[in-house]
Length: 393
Image 1 (cartoon, rainbow, N blue to C red):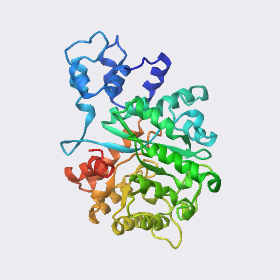
Image 2 (image 1 turned 135 degrees about the horizontal axis):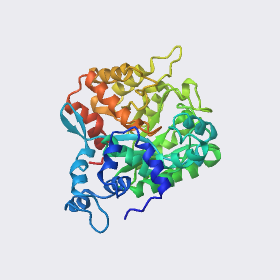
Image 3 (image 1 turned 90 degrees about the vertical axis):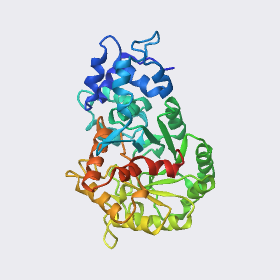
Image 4 (image 1 turned 180 degrees about the vertical axis):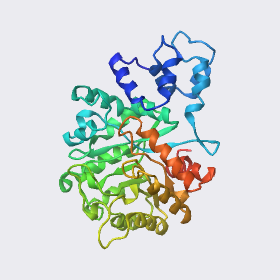
């Protein structure tokens, strides 16, 4: 059963809707009822429950009107691509709380949060809503994205903490909306390796967690440090894929050396663990070093050489990184030329700031259109490849 939201929490969440065209439409539905709560009800209930309430009026529990259901229940499930409804799964989303972010990361967020919520006294509750399961789910609904994947993160000095147990709680608050990727702490590895691996196992065997997330530069470890290869052994043991953050890290304190950034340095463990599927995230964006291949070319080489490599283009197509969209378009064109569409996954690296999840999907659809993807090819990238890889059909 849904829980009522406080006035302040609702007001803050409304701000996360400001960049979406959905906001005005929701508010106009019924001035006497809380439009945001209606949206949450739609998110939180199964289709069977929602459809059974389509009787033309609110029932005694305040469920949705048939007008709202008729206008939104199908509309929110799909994006339009070349006149066809296409399902989308965003496999790269970050949850957390303000208190679990380091000061440097909080400062970066303040520059992206809309006025007046960028004042420190308001930023904390605003970010807590934005990064909560309900806040992210609301953004997915606005973006017509059916499901998302929440990442656990253990990088307290750089990007913050979202521990496995916290991510599990967020998933369980909206179990029909999210999957999770588990992670583990790597500090004092020589001393703590066994305990950290046991922690990973504990969560990786749960149905909520469908894979492992590793962010080497943020966790301050190198790709080719064999000391940490036992992590991939646990993934092999349990039979779940591993997401690898590649590319130059811009967060304060993160590693920026080639061994923690360039995709070439992942090759050793990709070879050593052929039964583990590795997702090369971000295509090594901006990891340009003398004597090494272009990071995009390196990512494509790994995928063409090894059948256990998938690719994911989150963040690199964002407006600051790719103003005219040519970078993201080029990635999709190259993947098509190389016959790698069946190993492409969609992720945004959201939510980042209100409106980002929606805008990144729109930029991706534009890139696919420019790269002349058919509807069937778009469906593979946006939905079907994910379901096949993670066995969530």
